[in-house]
Image (cartoon, rainbow, N blue to C red; front, top):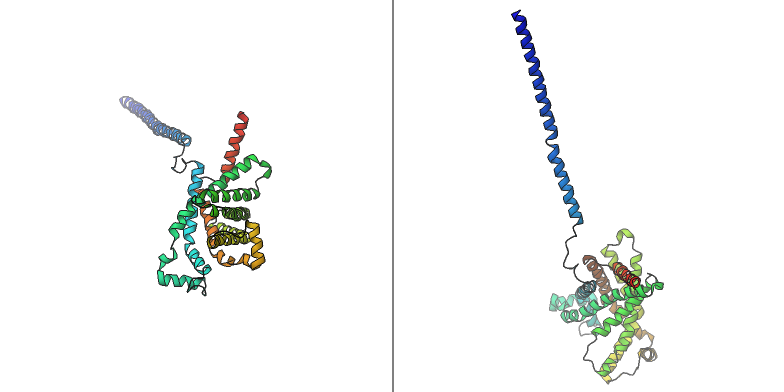
Length: 340
């Protein structure tokens, strides 16, 4: 009897101990499942809240982004002009030596002239006079590129019937070229020399217009996957410079001849550009209108290619584009008209 009671007691204790252990195991399992869940959920919620705050936070403002668009256009235009002028300075030096038939250079080609300058003057000889040229070209290029962007926006706003085609580039380019010439023309010119600004404008208006027109038209032909290609932009710029210079070079010949007559004779035999063209054809034959064109290609073609490409790259770096300017201007005008 005693043995049976002890056996039952042991069985009861074993059952109680088993139930107690099962309870402890269950509590530990629940604790293991729940304990990491709470802090991990809180971390996820905090991270999501932080991400939302970051997405609503405005991006950091760069110094360049804080500048007005017209100031960025001036900076990009001036820098592009200086870079292009410096890049073609050796070709400009050789062109001048060949055109003026300087002793020792009149009977040799471009490559031999290049080697001769390096041999006698070193690398610095290739850049002789470049500092003064850059000082002159920076304000001209800055004004030309900036006014081109502004004129294009004004034409799109005030003359929407013209559409968005390259014809806008022809008008804006011509106007910007004329504006740059007038604004950078030396203020201390005499009255006789001041009359020569007429032929200068007659030459620059079609040249600048054609240059922008051809460049923008060619860029439209570039495949979309190669829009950012530097080589393609250089090619478009080179063709724009080549064709623009070819079509308007005769006007430049007239301008230079009228300037030479003014220096030598004290006045000009031609009263205007049309009369100057007629006198050259009558007295020197029409071929004189193309004299020196091939030599002029040496400087103009790479200069235009590098200038346009550098300006486009700087526009991208300074976070603005022609289309954005035109859209912003159109939106502002539309809002102003709505308010009125």
